[in-house]
Image 1 (cartoon, rainbow, N blue to C red):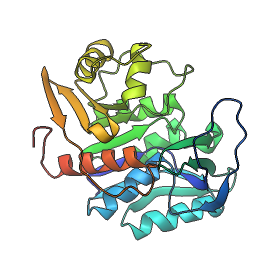
Image 2: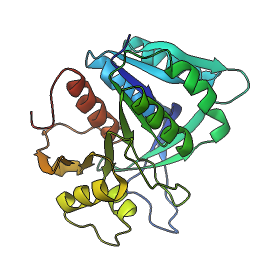
Image 3: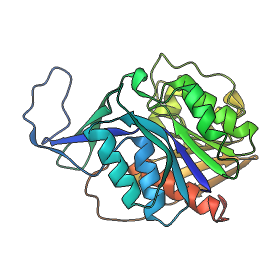
Length: 271
C-alpha cells in the first residue's frame, strides 16, 4: 500500500508562449501551442513523488478521453499506483491553459467543471481502502468542499492531511482547519487568507495562519527566496536550491511532492 495518497485534480495541460505576461486590456500574440507531459496539481504531485522513488497512489477520476488516458500514461510511467484512478464515460477531463513568458514566469487558466471531479461518496469508498497510508495531499483543483472532506476523513483515519490551499478565490469558505495537519500556501495565497492588502513578514504570516485557522503546521513558499514554516511555536526557514529554470509551471507541485516524500521517509522540517 502506498505511503502517500494524492487527492487533487488531474487535467490536460495546454501550453503557449508569449513575450511578457499580458496586462489588463492588452492583446498579445501567443505561439507554440502544445500539450506536454503535465497534468493538474494532483497528477503533477503524484508524478513528482513517483519519479523521486516515493510510494504514492493517486485517487481520482477523469474522462475516458485523451486527457484521462494521458494522465493514466504519465502517472503509470512514473510508478504511481493507479488502483484508485478511474475513467468515466459520462464526464470530460478538465483542461488548464498555461501561458509562459520568455523569463519563465507564467499565468494559468483552469477550465474546470466540478461535475468532472471525484465525488465525496466515491472518495470515501476509495480512501477507506487505503488505511495504511501515512500522508494524503489534497487541494482546490477539486471542489473545495470535497478537498476539505478528504482532509477531514484522512485525519480521522490517522493519515496526516496536507492541504495545498490553491487555487483560491472568494467563493471558498474556510474557517476551522484543525484537521489539516500541514497547510501549504504561497505568498499571495497567505495574504489572501489573512485579508492583507500588502504582504506581511512571512514568519508572522505563517504564525497568524496557524492561530486563525487552527492548522498546527503552516508552510509558505516564497519562490526564489525558499520557504518558511511555522510548527509548534517554532519557525523553520529553507533556502532555495539554484537550478536551471525551464518554466515555473508546476514548481509548487514539485516542491510539495519532494517535501512530503522526504517526510514520509522520516525527515522533519528541521532536517
